[in-house]
Image (cartoon, rainbow, N blue to C red; front, side, top):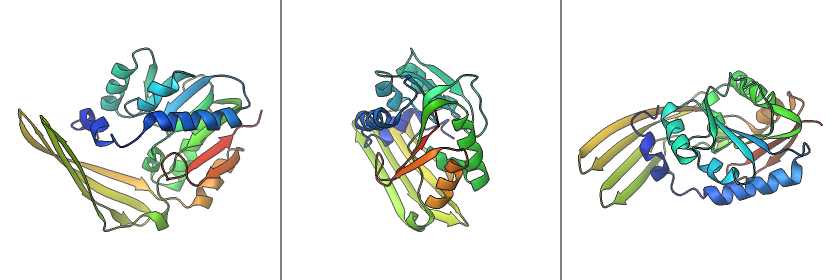
Length: 234
């Protein structure tokens, strides 16, 4: 998906304050963690910007399905172990005190059955007393189909215009990201197709509670999209 645009990922999402989000996560973990350990797995870690800050306190590993984003993550964090795997089907053969899945990446599972599978995989990586933190995608009522969005990057030797229209089919939100990228070498056009499932709050809660997690929902979360907190019994 990111074979052509991965190198621009951090430019596009420059609005995110990863350091502040990592500190917020630290606060939540300190308040809720019962295992007493410091091992953390970041699922769908992208380019490793959360890990850059989380590794200051935790012994961190990262997991993502995109080789292009993982390559950037490894360059940014050469001291960290990264895994290329699907969040719906992985077992690293070890356990963690904290498992995170942030920036709404969970939406890419698309269906409720796949959501249950992904949460099951992540829960299976927890030690007793561990904590699972998932930042959800939009609920069905919060997704507004037919809206147009644009991101513009204007630097001396890099111009990016990313334009998309939000669409809806059944319970799947989808959009084509059109990138127009200009560099001194020329201007190129790429298209990325994205599909993310829309889950009701109670559906998400049921998927977490189905793994015997003690569940809390923070409706604000890290960036206004909410945050699910699941505690694995000690």
